[in-house]
Length: 580
Image 1 (cartoon, rainbow, N blue to C red):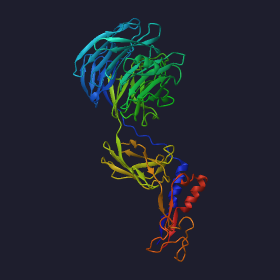
Image 2: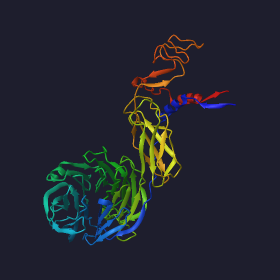
Image 3: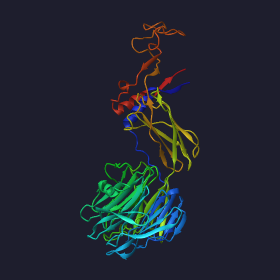
Image 4: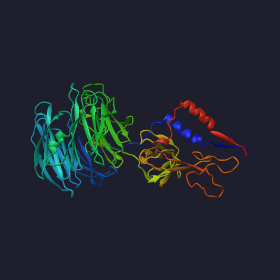
């Protein structure tokens, strides 16, 4: 009878080979499918935001509320008077206190201007304030409103001096609007603006789609209060990735008050992000989609939102199907793309199978999110009014990582608890990878998960003997991955394993230093202890172990042989025959 056994050196060799080969590109989650729910509101031009208690608020020709499933809760006749294909949208904001704030356009015409109206709805549901602010000026069809820390700010455009104009900024004082001044040099007719507020700050985005001049868009932010106008002007960042005209800016604030920012350039859509403290996340704007088709203004028309955590970002864009350079994108396909790493990378765009009217950039869709569920409001070419589509990403939760604290083992067993309450877990898909340089490079390592496929109960992913092979409190890192039964991949956070020295490793051979073991079982020069006796020389010189510190001088050396040679050597060590 013969048995075959894996040589212990093969484990180390496997690690070296994996390190040389490198990790495969991370598997992207299989996305959920969009659920198209048909017409949910009247009108063409609209704006929508999420308010307290996860209620969605929409203003078009009327005012609407929806719950977190997209069901209509309320409709009231408080809407926008300009509902034409080539008008821009009204604006809505909802305060943390539940008040609703509308800015809408009424009467007038493009060259002379419109009446701009502000209305307030109390948390108790009473429309208690309504008035006209500003004055009728040419092309004041672009409006904005933001609530932040109890302050309400209003805005509208003005192109009295040709197509290049200003944004008039006001503060609402509970029955009248106080003019704060103008934002200059950031807006041109045919570009939308966005205003959003949260965390005591106000954020604004605008564009200048200048033909033949390269174009640019702007992101501005300031603290709510007396100095808002000056802070918006001072905290102004210009974005100009891509070619030719640029416009269609979009702002979205996640649950951490980080600002997600998209805009269009010629036939493309770009993305960046700003932390709540102001810094830009990506050093250069990321291109999300290209080839968005030919139309009059050229820039990519898109909308965007993120999950509350900020990890999942969804972008929806219009791709014009026209070959006419003067078209308004009346026949445009809806495309979407998503990111599972906070906007660091995006999936390839996918056609949603529905068409919309771009309205020369003025019939833009709107996207918002509750948790990890996304709500797309848009004009569907095959339906009247405003339609809704929803998309929900599953939630797989990781918790209770082990080991915690310091461990005196350079190949520790690691585990984490995982649960998916939606479709359950695909147990066999559990994976992990580890890093020994603080996350700069990663190596795959085997992992197993308890439970059966489809389980919705908390399970444990385990990985035995992870070969960090070094002492460090910061550089040894590990993360886990598992797929749901619904096909979505979830990745845990990155956990740090703090390994300390000294670490004692049993040794079947001789002691380090001058200690030797006599072949006849006699005593050695170093005072080998006898069976059952104590070592007369004390600990540290026993022939039964070797003691080593895993400092910089004792790290596993980087492989210096060619990969092919290592593989060949490994094949010779894989098996050792043992005869009885």
